[in-house]
Length: 266
Ligand code: ADP
Image 1 (cartoon, helix red, strand yellow):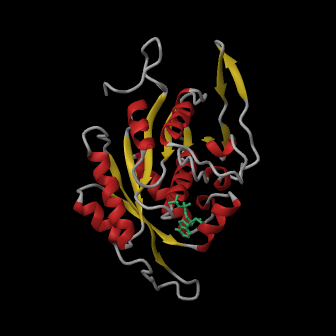
Image 2 (image 1 turned 135 degrees about the vertical axis):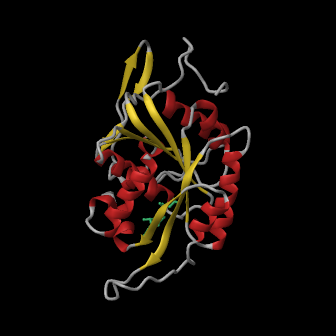
């Protein structure tokens, strides 16, 4: 689009990145970062070259979810400019504000500073050639969202929600925002996370703790694809905390995230 930032010689930023996909949610805590992390790893497992920007500046979770909390990216000089080398883990190139600030410090930034951090993650990081660059957005609607669309030609947005009424109400706002003329990002679809729970001892039972099929109905209401559902699984939470993505585990979690990657790649 015409308002996308270009470099001094007028080439668009990140010309070697084929697809730029935003992962968004209305509410926090619905599993947006979990989804973004597992999606990134699942896409990399399928042979794609993948990068992930943690744009959740005040609550970065990517360093923990990839078990690289102690890592610090190295910096090199190119034409007198500092270029950041992304951290690579599980085949995914990563950039997060968490790599640049102590993990227990609270980042209280005004909108413009958060936006300039995102701009730096886009323009000053050596992303190289990528099939997918995923952007894990902060929840809700913010300056960051505007900065993203003004800086990059975003291919599309994936909306993560739980089936719960309050999450759906906020996801609706998110969907509407992406369709506003000044944002205008295609919605690739809706993912319903924490869709149901199945206890090990009752493998045929599904308990819809947060309500049933809310994400699916949201997708229908907005005529966008429903990309699938991810159940509540203890190992998904554990793998987030230990930094070993759930998509590596056999069984339902691997299937759910791999299918999701296939749906997004389509
Ligand atoms: P968000 O990015 O939307 O704030 P997170 O991805 O950080 O949400 O997830 C919030 C918490 O819920 C994390 O502790 C995460 O491990 C957990 N979680 C997310 N999805 C699931 C799931 N499907 N099953 C179990 N725990 C989950």
